[in-house]
Length: 149
Image (cartoon, rainbow, N blue to C red):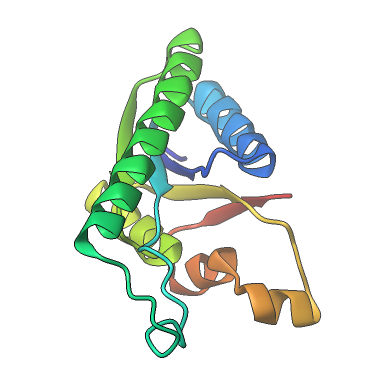
């Protein structure tokens, strides 16, 4: 059935539920897992340049360093969880990326045949304002996507 499962996480409580579910499924199926965490590009509000703020090279380097450290810490915790379950896994930090794009690319690159991710399940205006990485993955994925609420 599923032999290689891609599981996305951002370290949040909700993402942890998706991670736990995906790891339980992988354990039950004897599947390999690839864990991905994505850090987005430095936030740069559209009107920031007009207001006199533009991130400097130092700002960008500091942001990227902090994001890398957080990702390494998160993936380290996940690695411990995977080892306790006696699973085999790959770990990916996709820096300076948009989550849906990075998740879809990782699934393709690593030949995953299932993507597991968590979603708040927002609807209506909340979904429009916040966007939905899960919806983008669902729309663009050539493999099944398991969404955990």
